[in-house]
Length: 182
Length: 78
Image 1 (cartoon, rainbow over the protein chains, first blue to last red):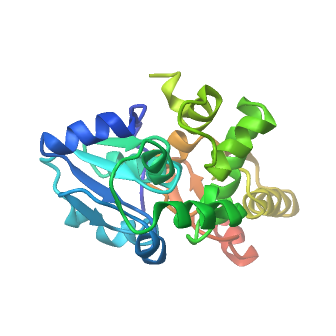
Image 2 (spheres, rainbow over the protein chains, first blue to last red):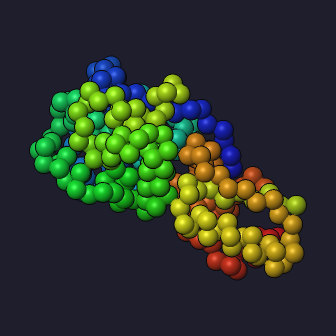
C-alpha cells in the first residue's frame, strides 16, 4: 500500500482569484456530492464534478497539465482533495477557500436559487462540515475543531452558517484558515 | 520496535483504533512506538482518504474504519 510523500502546503485562492484563473484556462473541480450540486452549482464555463467520495477511483480523469481549482461547500473537503491530488503528483492545484458559500456571498454566478440554497445550508448544521461523505466523521471534526480553536463562537457560526456578509473580516478569517499561512 | 502511526483528525474511530493497538501490544508484549497524526497535510502525505489510517514502519496497512483485533494481532506478530 501507500508510503509517505511529503506534501507542500496547499495553495489557497479566494473566489475572485478563482474567477481570474478560470478565465486564464483553469478547470474547476467540484468535489461536492451530486445532490449538493443539483441544489446549487457554479455557473462557470469549465467545471467537472468528482465527489470526494469518488476521488480515489476517479482522480486519473483529471488533467495534470492544466491548472485545477478544487471547490466544495466551504473549502474543507476541497482542501483534502487538493492534498490528495498533490499526493498523486499534481502540481497545478489550488483550493478555493470559503467554497460555494463564499462564492455566493460575493455575488458570483451560480445555477440554482442561491438564497434558497444558502437557507438550506444554514438549516443543516453539518452542511459546513461535509456530512455526506464516508470520511465525514473525521472531516466534520477537522472543520469544526479548526473553527472553534481559532476564532470566537460568532466567527465559527458565521463560517458554518454562511449567513454573514462577505465584508465581515471574522467570517473570511474563519473560512480561510490557511490564508494566514500563505 | 515497530513504529505505528494512527492517522485521523480526532474522530472517535481514530481514538478507538489507537486504544485497540495499544491494548493488543500490551497483551502480546510487543514493543511499539505509537503515535497519533492529526494534521490534515501530514495525514494526506500518506495518500489516505478514509480515516482512521494505520501506518507501520512507514507503510500504510489500513485505511477506513476501526481494524479488527485479529488484523492488529497479525500486524504486531509480523
